[in-house]
Length: 217
Image (spheres, rainbow, N blue to C red):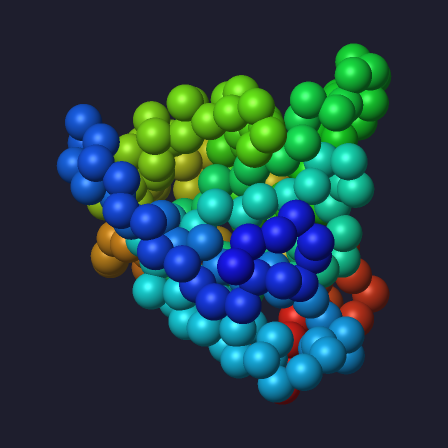
């Protein structure tokens, strides 16, 4: 059952696509609303299935309505996807409805500002109605997989750390002595410091209070 009305998709639908890079399975999940706005048990379990699809995905495509901009729910969902440990591609849908050049620039700046915590995620402007921009997706997927399998030489890692510390020294006399990549998928780095810092619960840089779970506890 497919309809353009929000909240009508109930299950995660798998679609197998053969590409020059090999077969790709796209999982179309149900849209996710705040838990307080979930109307019935069917919608709740569709949300659970969508979250399971996120946890099992190699890459997440975060589809955002360009006509609405970045909502608080988009931010919470991006945090949930980022926590799953897979790369993210941001897709600005309905781009064909944004005619004004200045408005387009404002939307892109808003994405950079409100979703900065997920890092340098690629942004793709598409139209599900006309198909415009969709052909650019496959190269982005391949590049994301390549980057997540990438191993950075220890020499290069420490050059970056040294340059960062020279530009902006850490407080409390902290200094990173050595850094090494310990894993991939996602790339994970281990840092050795000159002394241990006390644990603190810092708020998200874009919020005055810690972010709640997007779908309840």
